[in-house]
Image (cartoon, rainbow, N blue to C red; front, side, top):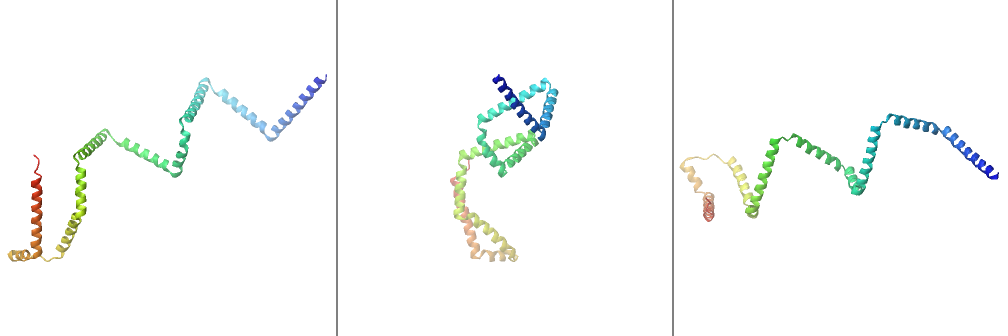
Length: 213
């Protein structure tokens, strides 16, 4: 008898707590929200057919599989780098660069691609020939000699000085007398002598390296 009374008291206490919880739900509006949520779930359940349920199940399975692959691939380690790219704007620049490359690729036709491929092949052949013949080393040696002797800079300065002086010099008189006046000047004789020496040494160099047939 005592056990029955104790069990009844327990049920009464639980019922009292349930009434209090229900009253609290009614007062704060949570009961109405639960009713609306239940109606929404019921409407969605009624509107879904077997095909939609199958697709949703497949989507959920694919999502879980994708999360599993992400966890196993270590993409999480790349998140700080991706965050840095987003913050400093490099990711946006990469997107613009990809769009530019895509636009260029779309604008190229077969003929342009063929020409570009031919140009690339010719450039590689030229680089290979220059590398095998040692032309780069010789050109660098010539450039170093030109830099040391100041030949190129002196030649450019001479051209500039001659152009400026010729613009201000008077017109030649002409005739044998005028030519004699120019020839008898020491500077003219030194210039002719220098040109003759240049021709002499150039001839010696050419004779030392005969032209190949």
